[in-house]
Length: 324
Image (tube, rainbow, N blue to C red):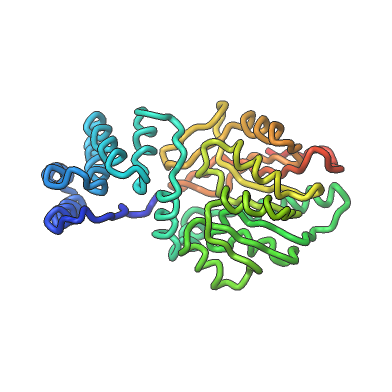
């Protein structure tokens, strides 16, 4: 997701809000210097106006004023501790502050709520997204190698979004649960009639609640979810607590040739293969399948990705398969 417009949170001052919108009009006409001047006046009038600070940072960045952009993004970050605009991510992209900051719940929720109505069309028609289909093929290969039919009594779809992953696996699942942080995405998923249960909540909170009730899932899916998570260790550990002994965890990632975690210019995280292997092992999971491929495109170019299937280390398994 890289094409959403700016989020707007009012300053509470009508004059400042009008100046902000006037600045956006200038930017829309290509007058970025004029827009920057108006925004500078706006934040002088309303120093706590995080939206205007963020817009000023973005425009200064576009004008090549890196130091000015950093200063504005820092003001946006400080004015809004929930960081609903993603100022910390922009600072990381510019090489200032934490290089791999966690995305706040508020930022992710607002981002996806804004995007929900055009999510399916954007991913499938414009970004050539095929993550769910590739995950189903990978899961089917692992099950076939183990001599098991492609059937699951229960599946947990993490970050279910509008239900693209649920649609790919619904024919093979008896009980399907979807979880997403964004209410608008859950509404889109609910309209498709795919899920037996839908939950609007943070993934970590739902996993903790499910573990407390001793819930066990035969399949946990995370399609295009971990690209919004910098540190995978806590979420992998939480998933392990709700995964059945013979269950599978299947997910997609964007990746890069180096080690560790990297924030991409798209403000999505890429995880190195060695990092993924280490996190799975530390979490008590064994890799069953890993394929390097592309699950989507960006500006017409394929994005380096991983398709991963893992299972508890104590489970009976076939040797891990790998693809190029």
